[in-house]
Length: 484
Ligand code: FUL
Image 1: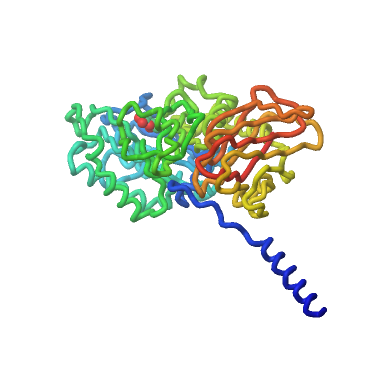
Image 2 (image 1 turned 45 degrees about the vertical axis):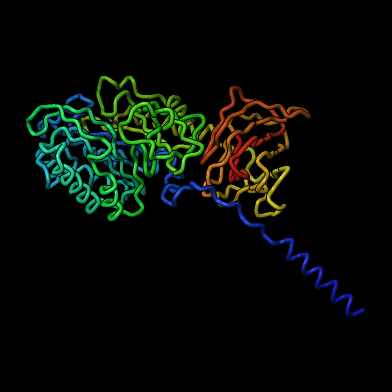
């Protein structure tokens, strides 16, 4: 008798421990984000700041022959106000044009006379790069730099000496103003310029002149975790337009060998990515709050409204990209009142539209979850923990997630997030709402990625919501669902 009870206890113990055995996690896909790319995704909204002699000449592209004396912000200049505004309205990082195509440097570079040090502003002692960097530290925003490869002022542009000059400036910037989270390499190259007085057209072989591998290595030696933006990455890619619109289908992967800076006709590929791309190079959506990238008083009436900014949010962050919104300071050296008002209105819209998540903490039903293990339970999508996720068995690529409400609710937005550390998987999904006893499909689309925000054409009263993953590259992994 004793022996049998012992056996019972042992077998009970074994069955309990077996139940708690966690199945193997899904295998990662071949292209997954690196840690710094993951951190970049999570930033979601960064600010871009274009400020230089163009602000004072009224141009968008300075020729490179501007006198430094024209750069002269007023006593009201206040980089703190720029960054404070970004902080208050929800931006996580700032990228500053330290040097635009005209070659004028916003810091007192020792390698050129074409800089703030020869302007009357603060008797030549001003330094915009330092001020923005300090304000970012104060408000805990990350700081990034734009240093235009094309330089219409420099006499040696087009020759190897210029590459040395460009690299010296990178060293200056990274030595004195770090840490930096992102470095922007602009692909623009219009050819003609002042070039030390030669006033001619210079063309460079775009894919070889800058020796990008060497330049990137140099920057990485100073800032190992930096994200590089260029048309084709390697950190993040251009989204293919300056209108604020990522592809509705938006893969974070491309095969970069097929691309190089300045090559035309690849906008669609950049916009939508490539499902079978070999590298994780997500699109960054750069767009200006104004018509131009620089401040021009005559564009004060054209500042994008809060509603326009909200639409851009939906077509950028809401399509799995990061928004890089340009907000250019005016001639005083302040973010203009109109821009501040628009940004604040935009923030209010975000806060009201996404105020009350109807499914937070709710029970979720699914027709499949990995080996029936709690580790991959569908409740993981409503637990507000980005590190937990629902996963299906390896062979299951179609599955449902269902959430029922206690009473009729009106649904306007559905937010979906894949668990991207193991790769982007979902190829197609459908949203249905429960009306009476019927699940009514109301929306179908393709990719999800880091985040997908679906705005329903008209708010729908319903008793529940169902997300059907129709197809995926491998078993789908969903980390978060919110409903508003
Ligand atoms: C473009 C530039 O030519 C514009 O002036 C601006 O800096 C934009 C962000 O990138 O290529």
